Length: 172
Ligand code: SF4
Image 1: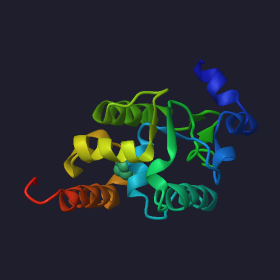
Image 2: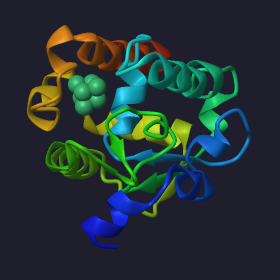
Image 3: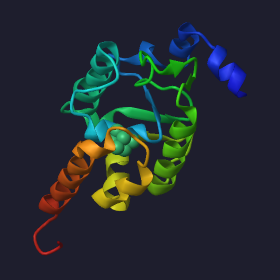
Image 4: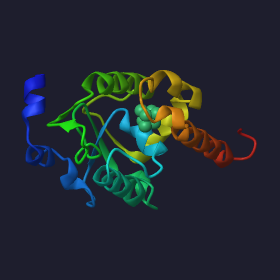
């Protein structure tokens, strides 16, 4: 699909391809590569009320729910379940597409995930635990307006601290 096609697709097509239409269901969530870490760092702020409400529903209502690690994730390189109501979305693309492409490439390489991959949210967390430290975000998130606030680094640090606490005695 070329850029013209990406920006021409209406919201109804996005829903058909698994966008907002999947929120609130037990179906697969579609996530861009960099949205794995964004979901870990999410603290209830976003680009608009609708965006924040939708992302809160995904993150708090599904991924951080008691059974959240079992949620099925499909990795995509177009607008995803989080992007659906974003005021910056243009069809299946974004008004800041160059930055989004850079973030996706850097996060995908860091986490070893590619468009088309299917994995559980628990497996996504395992990738982060195994492959990311908070300082990596200075490089892979370069250009993101949320980086300076530090919430994403704090969230990764908390995830890694949980990993150490969960290790059986004598194995840390
Ligand atoms: S700094 Fe930006 S790109 Fe990086 S995890 Fe946070 S919100 Fe996502």
